[in-house]
Length: 157
Length: 157
DNA sequence: CATGATAGACAACCAGATTTACTATATGGT
DNA sequence: ACCATATAGTAAATCTGGTTGTCTATCATG
Image 1 (spheres, rainbow over the protein chains, first blue to last red):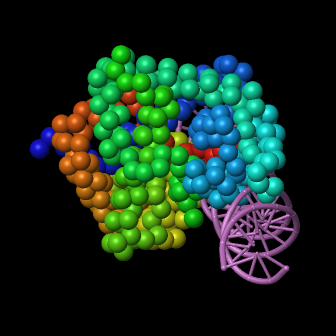
Image 2: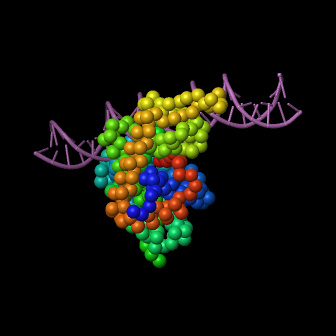
Image 3: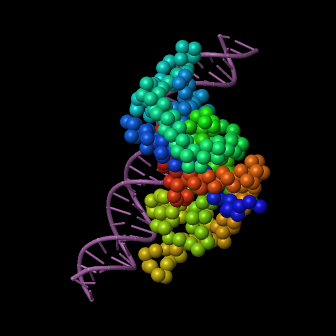
C-alpha cells in the first residue's frame, strides 16, 4: 500500500520545489546585474529563443492572449532585453528578438538553473533526480510553457 | 554523469505536474456541485482546517498580507464556504471557520487529490511515486502553504 | 480583385495583491 | 488605574497583469 500521505501534499511539494528553483535562479540573476528580471522572464526568454519569434507565436507558446504577450514584449523591450524588427517576409509581422543583454540573461538563467539542478542532485543523488525527472515527464502533460498562471491562480473573487 | 537535460526543464515539469493535479482535482469538484471553487481554494480550506483560524494567522500561513487574506475570506464567506464568528477570548479577533459546505469541499478535494495520486501511482508505480514524494520533501524548503504566487508570478511590468 | 483570415496595437475592464491609514482591543510597565 | 505599544481587523488607493473588444494593415484564397 506504500504511503499514507494526504493527497494534497504532493501538489504542494511540487509547487514549493518549483518556487524554490525559480527563487534561487533569480537570486543568482540579481547578483549578476539583473535584479529587475521577474520570476517568469527566464521562461519567456527561453520561449523566444535565440532565433526570435512573433508576438502571436509567443502568445501561443506561453498560453496567453496575444495582447498579454504584446505587453510583456513591450515591457521587456523597454528594459532593453528584447527588440522588435520588421519581418521582411510579412509586413504585418514583427520579429521579436533577444538583444545582447537578453541573451546574457538567457545564458545566466540557464547556468543558474543548472546550478540548482546540481545542488538538487547532490541532495538526493544523481540517479534519484534522474528518476524524478523521468517520472515528471510521464506525469506532466502536454505543453510545458504555460504562463497564464497568474490568472489561473487566484484565491478571491 | 547521468542526464544532459537543460536545467530549466525540471522546474517547468514541476509546475506542469502541479498544475495538472490542481486541474484534475477541480474538474472533479466541479462535477460534484462546486464549479465555482477556484484553483487555490482547496489549499485555503486546508490552511483553515476544521478548527478554524483568524485572518492574521491565515495570512501568515498563506504568505500574503492580512488584507489579501481578508479579501479571500470575504469572498469565500459570500459563497457560503466560510463564516466569521466573534472570538470570546479576544474582542478584536474573529474566528474564521468552515461551514458545512466548506467542509464538504475540503473532503471532496481531499478525495480528488487522493484520486490524482492514485492515478499517478498507476502511471509510474507506487514505489517511484513514494520516492518522488520523499525527494521533494528533501528539496522543497520550509512552509508549504505559500499562496502569494499570483503576485510572485507575472511576466510584464 | 474581393472576401476572409491573420499580425499587431489600443482601450476599457477586471482580478488580485500591496501599501498606507485607520479603529478597536489587548497587554505590559509604571 | 494609566499610558504606551502592539495586534486584529477593515478600508481605500494603487499597481501589476491578464482578458475582451475593437481597430487597422496586410496577407492569402477564390
